Image (tube, rainbow, N blue to C red):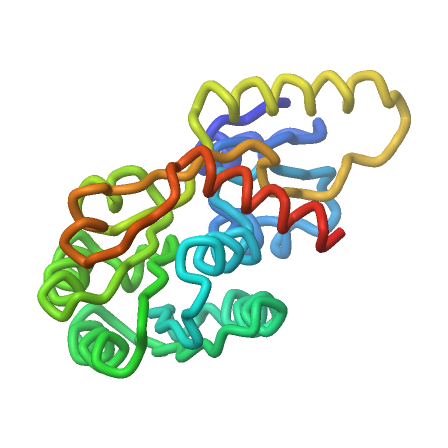
Length: 231
């Protein structure tokens, strides 16, 4: 069964057939898999791997030494992954573990005050529409670049971001499903992030911050180069 989105993924678990989920965030998929360890289940995530974000930051801001990241208090996996990915890029990471929306504003203020840039990941418990707007506004006022996880965040004021276009994700899903069907009798592959991605840049924000950034295509090429050399 191919399930598109978290709701379809959960519904597909009612049957006995193996399930391939796509257009799902890792944070939503992992708990589902842990609750059903006996079910043949895999996924192609919609979000980007943490190391890719750190490579983008290094490509954009070669002199940066430290970034701030707001995370939900429950995001221990992301916290650990960030530390490993950042260490490889020699970037210090200050994480604010946020319990709820009410405490988010003060935590974000501290991150902006004490760090050179901010990384906004897919954290719906933390980055609600209200807190995301606040983060972007305050970072803009304090001239701190924000790197975001979506086109919407970049259009709203993040200086750059990563995403996988839906057409590319659809093509990658189709290829992955065909590979599964061809491997009759074999276990499902492990869940993974998309290989395809695109860099987005908000040139107006970059200009305001005084950043002379390479083109999105050049940044994408640099990120891919860093990915290849790390393998």
